[in-house]
Image (cartoon, rainbow, N blue to C red; front, top):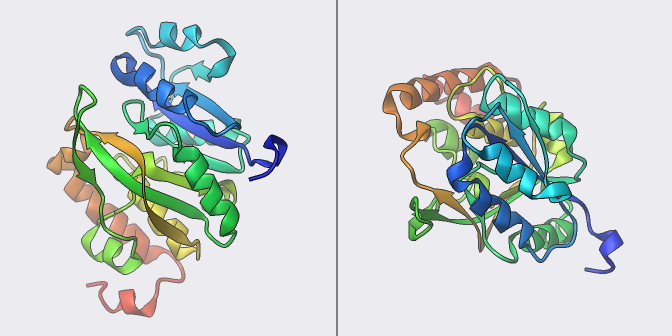
Length: 244
């Protein structure tokens, strides 16, 4: 890939609120990468559980702030504005990158395919102790399928996104409580952004039965996001026919 100075900077943004239980393992999965240019940013919402002590222990290896915010998407967008990387990864504070080559694999692919805006790989599903219990999100990205079935397909821990497309779609929608990532992929794809899957293990999603498993909020979120999608310009005719 050439000299280190030619590598694009990768910024990984982690929103955090009282995430001390898993945060160190998440940070280590980033800091143990064999890719030479990574900046790690933790956007903390004012934790009181020992998170700040963990962050302080990393010194200059991790950039962080801790202050009240307006939720997950707001924290992600703050981190995006603070970051400097040409390539951005959005990682939850309990998820992991595959060690040691996740970032290098993703960057090599993006450098070889300049037309691709987002690349994502395979993603393992791990339990609270870090044991792999299965695989997540095995479906290839397809906009029509994603809209019709409200299936986002793309795992955040295994995805790497060019800054240019994130800025073009203005980051995450801070008005959404659930399925913010699904909404992001829809908007990227609708704008013409090219999303590409590669059959390589890049990340691990922690299966702790959190917010995304709450049907009382996830089902209404699917309706909200789908209605929002059909209010946007440039919806393909093939999907407009299925609007009802």
